[in-house]
Length: 119
Length: 109
View 1 (cartoon, helix red, strand yellow):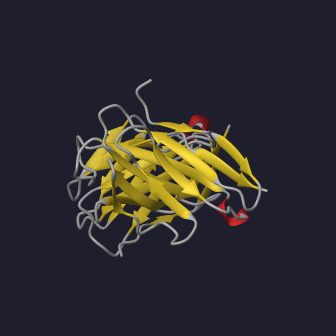
View 2: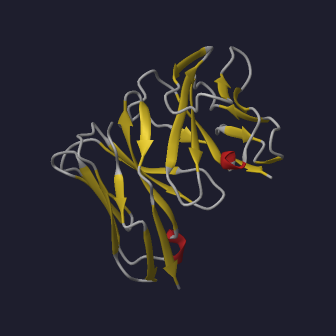
């Protein structure tokens, strides 16, 4: 399966715990994006990473949230001290080239998402 | 900041009917994309439009990019229950993709 792989698909955490969401991009893709989706809403951009670099984190909450994309291994979105408002679907996407502007031949591929529930 | 607004937000129709979903912005986009998302899954790209006035067809789906590249529409002919889902438009902003809030379509048999 050469698609974007996210795990876990479903995660339940108690308030105050940490959540770690993983994303393995498509083979050959070195650009990863994380989005958050609340019920009945569109996708909100969180962060854009390349290997070992955060390119744009303008959509990331300033506290408790962090992301990384190490040289080896998957990208990880980490949420510390989760609160109920963090409950959402978190989607990862990857693309193959440096210019992420959509155009013919440059497509961003999404994973199937990780559903976080904070109880 | 460029924003994408979709309308209607919800649409419930009977099988066989036609429908149009709109995606509007006050800003010019170099391109726009349409995605379809089913419950419990990630968005799947349907089409990318890059030229003002462009029309693309995908079976019963017709996509149009406005002449001024500020808006786009998705028209579905003879909708089927399998068309049910969340339809999202998206466009590039500063190296990342931003999304409209989506149109939730329900096609009843």
